[in-house]
Amino acid sequence: MRFLLLFLCLVSLLGCSEQSSHSLSTKADAVVSDPVSHWPIAEPASLGLSEQQLLKIHADINDGQYGWIDSFLVIRNGRIAFERYYEHDYGEIYGEESRTPGPLVVQNFSGPYNYFNAFWHPYYKSSDLHSMQSVTKSIVSAVIGIAVGRGDFPDIDTPVLSFFDATQLLNIDDTKRAMTIRDLLTMSAGLEWDEGVPYSDPTNTFTIMARSPDWVQYTLDQPMASQPGTEFNYNSGASLILSQIFLQATGIDIEVYAEEHLFQPLGIERYEWKRTPTGIADTQEGLFLSARDLAKIAQLFLQNGQWNNREVVPQDWVIDSLKPAFPLDNDASAGYGYKWWSLAYDHDGGDYVAYLGKGFGGQRPIILPDFDMVIVVTGWNILPNRPFFSAAEVIERVLFAVE
Image (cartoon, rainbow, N blue to C red; front, side, top):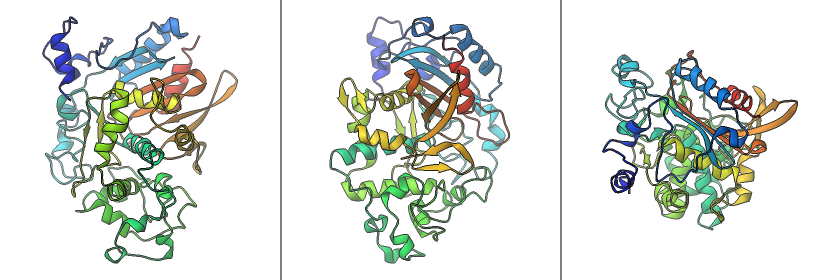
């Protein structure tokens, strides 16, 4: 299945050569043709966008103003208006770090959790499949929504510990027993967890978890810091618990379910999904997709879960996913739903809300419903205090191109 792109290139009349799709798609000034993506392409002007303004963004990306950016796509009215890819030698850029023990070199130097290892990150084995990092969480939420809609997954107010043997866990009390699936989805599990410092900081709870043999066990063993469902606290381990619950509740690995019920309906035929040390699908950061296929996920949510006149994700789940369950105390303009972020912004005198995923390194699928627009940015800015293309600036600059 994952060699379908090469096969189509060989049999088509498009003149594709026998090179990987990544090598075809990393020329900074080239608009790429992908015969299996089914994305129509239109001139920016035909979609009410200034190509000149979009080219200015491209030039700034190319000049390194935003650090290491790998792709930049703008889609409006379901058509690709602008698409650029940027090639970087990550083996050279992060070569020293990849050989140096530290919080982002997890398990071993050659493994898939060495975030500086160019064999694994940001592209999977030199393909065009880019690490989604925590955008994986948003996609996992969509898969759970599909399973809920089909009656394959339990009510999200089911207690988490009903899927585990509590006698094998630490710090069990009534507060932990009250934690539900909904609390995992909304990052309000109540567990003691500090993921607010850089991932290069060894005190980050995620980096401590990543060195444990069982990531789900480590997360569930943490003491409770607050009543579940009462406050937002970003916790990647909570999303890993969902992987184990999905397997326990359905008897199906979430990757298998996602392929049948999400990827296939969208025509996503190539992906990779990393596994944790215990072998379950890494539902907090493990997915790799092409930029165009990431755009499909965002477009699906823009279309309220519909794709080709078929409901893929229940509309109610899309609404609940994007609707903020919690405003973020440190940013009154931002909110968090079922693993999707919201961001209030103003444009040309009007007040609007964007919805997006956020992935370590700069993965940003951005949905602008009021402008019928999807923007995708991928990158690999994984060290702190470096240039970065924030979602707010992406939105501001792209909307400046609206004519």
